[in-house]
Image 1 (cartoon, rainbow, N blue to C red):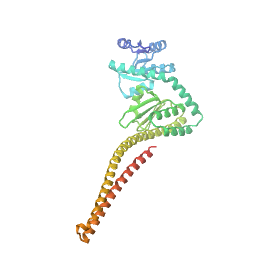
Image 2 (tube, helix red, strand yellow):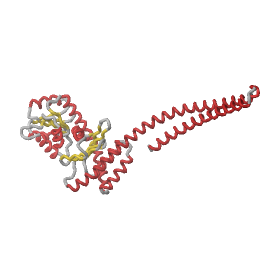
Image 3 (cartoon, rainbow, N blue to C red):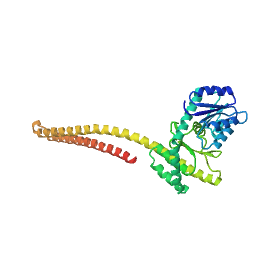
Image 4 (cartoon, rainbow, N blue to C red):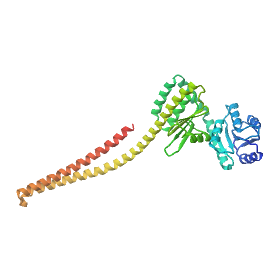
Length: 370
């Protein structure tokens, strides 16, 4: 059994007992049948996971979740909402209330267990990275505090330009966003639809945030709900969770964040193009090496044939007086031999030229990728 604690909150006692039997083998399990009891049990036990029913007799799960998050801002815990309605609106309401995942009734116990395991892993990852993240955040704040917003933007693009992979790009993004005193999650998508969603350079987002990205990625360039803003491009979406209430400041940040999102989109496309060019260059280099090897053989064969032909032509010329040919016939044979010798020399030169062109092609592609 791990030290992880689960609080079950549902007015159906039989439901709580069933889930308690499922989870008690691996976790410490507590239950509550009302909102007030849930608040009291939470304060006593400090659970890691709260499995929270939305419909409670004395209140609703949204209010309970907001109360727990606001009352315990320094606690690291996750909330899974349980709802009888599986709609996009319910998912967004759960996310706005502070939930980390969502499941609709009726559900399979195996699905719920998988969600709990995923959130346990998510919490452990967050806690393991907390100290390093705090140190990184402090350093980022210190470095960014000395620069104005546009200075930070210039620095962002300079570092983006030097990024060579998506991990470096994500690190630059989160350090820049933290330097602006903003909290964000980032999703990067490939052309085939595969997505990587991060709430930090090295930390995955919660399951419900992944669902929010998927729901809203086609909702326009900028989508606002509450004080959260989602910025969308084809391959990149940025979720800003704490946009300021001041309209002037919010408007200024929206302009900057649009530029940042567009910069990320351009760099993601550039990295993908460079990767494709790298792969193409490998193929071209391999094919070129094979062709040059074959051309070397052809060039050697052509030179050898030209040497043999030259020897043969010389012997024929020396034997003209034995052949009793007329002057016109001798001229014809001499002209024919010269033409053949010229064609062989041209073939040798063509093979040599082809080798040079292949080598120039590979060199040119290598320089374009430097």
